[in-house]
Image 1 (spheres, rainbow, N blue to C red):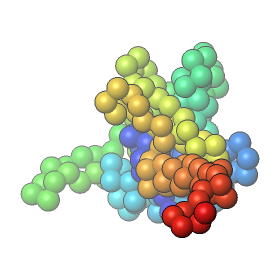
Image 2: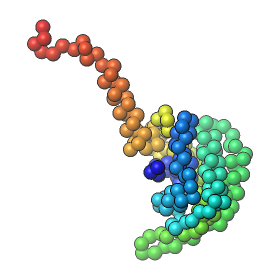
Image 3: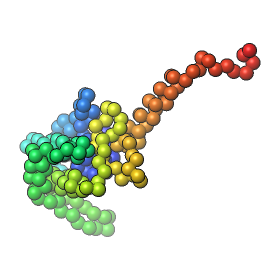
Image 4: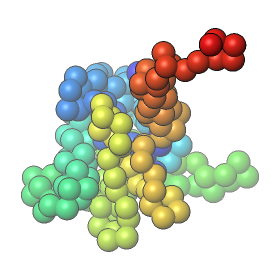
Length: 189
């Protein structure tokens, strides 16, 4: 599975590592190595993080808590108390080290620090009353994203995958329903 970082927040991107949650869930983090690769690809997180089975399971627990809490926010319902506890416990962990250099910022830390950073990022966006969280408008996609578009008109988590699929399906449906049989060309009298 290729990871897409289009949610506008690393915690929401972590929650999106399970695709199509309502139909046939596809888990992009099946092994600790998958988690290590996801973290390495996320520009805002520490590099060279390793995961053992215990920390991997903690990451999956945090992922599911973030998803439930974000969905609670999208559906305008009270936060799941179990999810809040998992998120808050993770956020209370150690923080990554940030170093400024000529090449920019270098973020380092172990998986516990990475999970703490993800939990803090999730808590920040979930607590913001002005953050516009939405679920992708494509039927099979369950990604929750932060809509920063002008007028909050964004409908899909990302154009490359979901937006293009929806537009292509709509185009095909229009082509199928057009009355091509009744159209007469020039000189067909």
